[in-house]
Length: 58
Image (cartoon, rainbow, N blue to C red; front, side, top):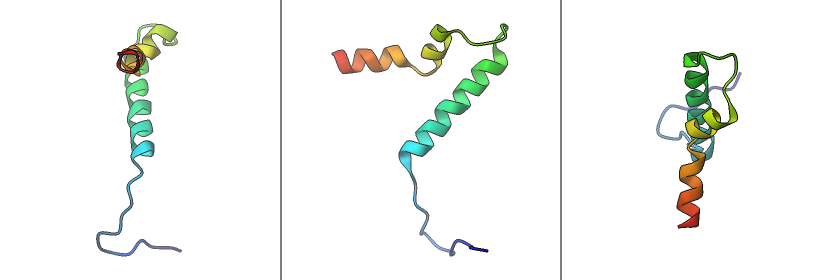
């Protein structure tokens, strides 16, 4: 069994953390939705796709 050493040696993968946060946002949106599935528009809204497009276009 491998045990992480004590101390400040933890490595953070910022991309992985961002993906985990987005997955959590999708899970929360899906659990709050009244329909069986989220629409593509709802998914885009949760993932802030339009905001990303606007930021790269401007």
